[in-house]
Length: 421
Image 1: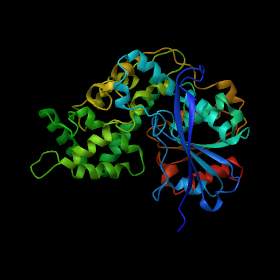
Image 2 (image 1 turned 60 degrees about the horizontal axis):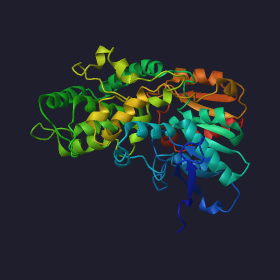
Image 3 (image 1 turned 120 degrees about the vertical axis):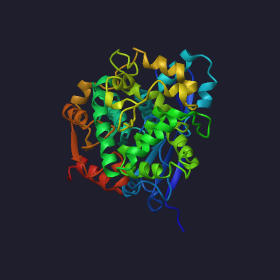
Image 4 (image 1 turned 180 degrees about the vertical axis):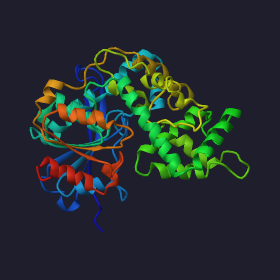
């Protein structure tokens, strides 16, 4: 039996700081994937840019997202582990703990934003393709990377596909979270409408946490604010059901929190596999010389419906808060460095509005009308500000539509970019 995928592993040696190529080096890993029946053909390349930040690329398997099989009909795919993730000189709690100087750690982490990832991608493209441009598929944060790529090296791109990831080019962290909290509130209320018993169940759990010292398997205390972070799942297509069934088994026969619930909650909120998601979340909006200064935390302080004693209990989404770096073992080694990044005013712009306005690289983007994570209004504003962008607005899919659609979303994006739709 032939394997489902033909794969080749690549490891690239790149500068930590591309502006200082003689300085420290890191490794960046990428996996080439092709249809075994076409592996010997000179197929065009499609670079996959994973969402996140801080997420590694998917590993090809029987459970691979449908977009991969769709892409392999016509392309050779490169699954990039963005710097710091997966097999690309990973940034972990253990590696962070080895750095005793928070300032030095913050300086290191500042090299893991979109501009550095794009520089890595261009180095890899030249190594694999020479002077030939390639195509990109950006999921969520991968769309942010795409706009940075178009700003810095459009000559490397033939066509770009973006799924739920057109960023606001000039949006500050404060504007982003002012738009995000109402969407999260509406999504939580929609969840309670679908599963009305879960509102009192979550309040019961919160009361248990407030009355005692409940520990997760790794020793962290489970607090109400950490419980609320489970709301991150609600923006995905199966998120309501995943959260509902987790809560369904939350309480044991004695009315105490079950081992199953505590174990799963530790995994879902512990950032063990992707600490960069927490460390870099607000740096996505750090440009123009203004510190982000824990924007999500400041915004929530002015929203009484998000108070911990509010009824119903409001969950939170992708927001990252300073308490996480004190309360969560997997993030504690980053605490002081993360605070330094939050108060940095040294961020360089990630997007070039003038260059993007003149863009001629075809960009096909799906904008999810009800996206909990990426504001559709900002996405559509960006689509108007960037040349050669075609958008498809839909409420058929949630934020994970590129994977949940069995390849249909990617097929339509490819048709759009080619002028067939």
